[in-house]
View 1: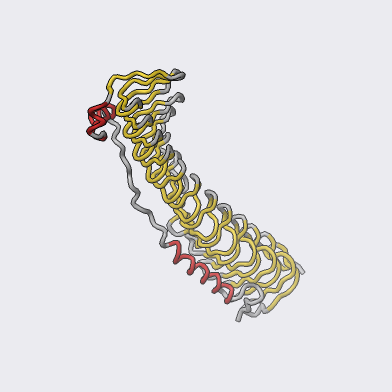
View 2: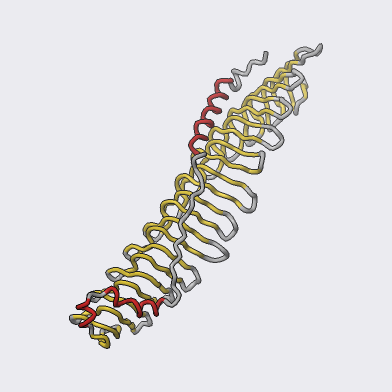
Length: 344
């Protein structure tokens, strides 16, 4: 009977398997959500403002509005309606710098539906409150980007959709004009991420798809990279379940390979490193030390014909002092090995 205990015990293997099993129960709950699309209709918005603004006024306000007032300021001019000497109802504010606003007013403040054109070429169409974008609206950047959705005190906040260049987009939750909460980002290179966000960076639980390789990751993210427990699917029958650090396999985990091989053990910098167990599809098995994906250090190898080697390894081959036991009349041989050959 092969004694594995010195190299990697059955108990340690079971502990790693249990670790993976327990963590899998959490990540299977990470699923895509139906994200709310907020479509803000900007068509004929100025006509809509003109035809509907009086509906938001009291009867007294409607009866006493001065509809054709003009007020000059140091940097601008206002043309529109006033009530009790204040901009109120419907009006247009033209700034000498080129900026302008057209829409509803309440007590000298932009409030209600409006359109604002900024000096940098951006334009906002939507609802205002107390002088700021608030409610539903759409922002057009001069670069061609757009955002439509919820606003709070001039900030993108709530549910919304952003569209950039080359089919890049984000739909989901916003706080302080950044992706915060749950949302999905499709990148211009075809990659995508759906999950939890903090200040426009994936943080928390999520799912990523990598278009170039076809790979998929589901699990925990920190600062935009897989960190903590996760599952990376390389292809149909090749996947890894275990710990990640800064986007790389690091810590304990299990990797299954399409050829039918599997490895259970430690990883470092995305490679098998430390103590581990590799089982080939042929049922050959190695337990011991690894370095940079290769058997390296002290380990034991058992072949399916019953041959067993225990001793030193270097860069994937028997190298150094070791002992090999054959199941036939050759018996046991012990000594110094070089590149899998007993030399003395």
